[in-house]
Length: 323
Image 1 (tube, rainbow, N blue to C red):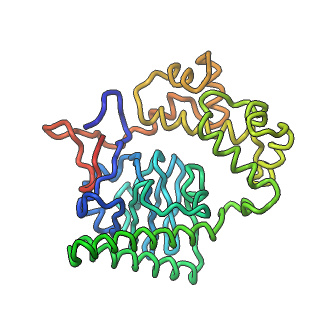
Image 2: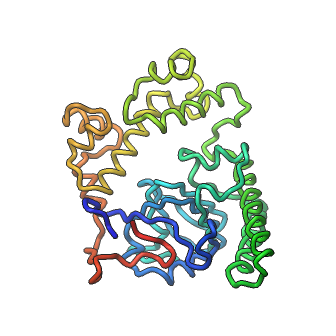
Image 3: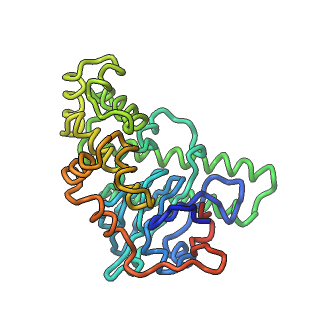
């Protein structure tokens, strides 16, 4: 059910329609479209699971956390729990005609590999444009996952073998995530071995935990055991942005999510993010986003009205459970 106070964004929890206790599902974009009505495809959704999509052909535009990402052959998208998306669309808001494979999986399904921690972090890269050779390698990896998933989905194994197939799926997903870790950040951030990279990552993880309580670089530097100047240098080297800019950007993103997702008054959203005065929050938001909170909120409304069915539910994809 849609919880009281939610507006334009649908919250969707993971629920595998094929194998209820399996934390991964592999399907094509065409199969996903068959589960959707166009009115739902046009609306943003916020997932509580990971979604990786590899585009093998066609064109469209996906929105992730209010940023548009063109989708063509070689596009690799990774959405993490909590991020807001709108499925790839073509002109006039129609679902895109894409040849793409999707991997949906819960946060606890991948094997615990230290090298993939950054890939699975909530602030990792969202989109890559893969060169032809790399795209083919990812396609082979995704198709192997799809083949093993089909064996499990179709019940073509004994119970004992099904458990082994589940283990194999976990390891195959881990291998694909290692490939993603090897891609690095398309924005050019340094690998973890580069000077300052570890401090930058530690800051981003601490920022993810406590951005609502402080945007002070001095606070974060003290928690991490460094000077504010050293922290700022590490962030500039890793991203080209200062620690203060990164902290402000994370708070602005949360404000956008809350404005699009809830009916909370603007002043209440500001207070939840540490602003005691609504005017200060409004100035901050306008500086970071280039719009007023009210203007941004109104632009997130769907182009056509959404009407629930008799039960009060929207038509979400089969296998996605509205919460």
